[in-house]
Length: 327
Image (cartoon, rainbow, N blue to C red; front, top):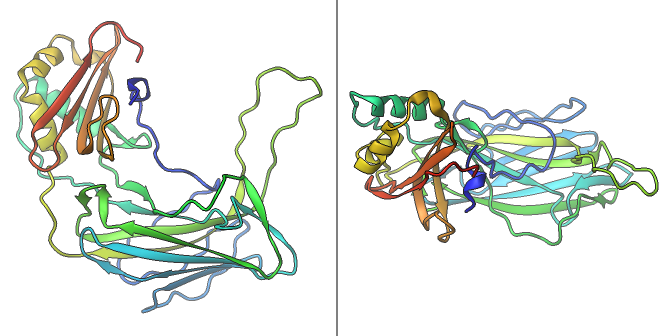
């Protein structure tokens, strides 16, 4: 892992369409909804069905879920089908083997236990990380984590492809009831959204012949058709160390406390707090799940990055850049 990428939180989610979909906050059986441009209508919400349907512009997205209630660590499978019900071909995002269909869940992070209250500058740091720290995607550190469904890659990447009139394309995706790998999801409702991008709205910029200047940043934009619902996680799970307890473990380390105390809080420029899991050790990042706590300071710039075990709160490692560094 390159520490130069750690100054701000990094978004781990691949955005397939240039539109936003709000996630529901209620509970109960999944409900169908349309999110598209232009506005479209959706069929009534099913009260006891696992099938979600949305329609727009003559196209239909149908999603079935094999499990609505999961135990921690159990896997739900989503089968999505996008149908071109018109008499004309349509552009879809990505390859026609999956039409760029994508799903994600909004997974709550543990908020408690808050741990101890310190009586000096260490409490200032704890309040700063919990209140002003960032999580993945540069969102508040304790916001829900947006997690992509797992799916088999169906081939080489392409921006868009053509789906013939009357044809359908399907994709199977899954979510294991975990926050990150090896850490079970918390009990309660887990909102999800499944989306498909269609009808590309823009093209790449053009350049005059022989142009050798800087290239303009460009991203494809598609209309979006989405369904949203909720899963319910029930049952016992392993104990997860709360973010406050993880920070306490770092603050109790004498070397870190000394490093923290040698510069005033006015030099702090950014803090990150991630619950993260890596399938392998990479750079300073250890293998497996960790609470990742990071503090960056200026004048001159330096930083400390710590890893805490999310199950027993043991401090696994602290890494420092103490020379004036731009990483």
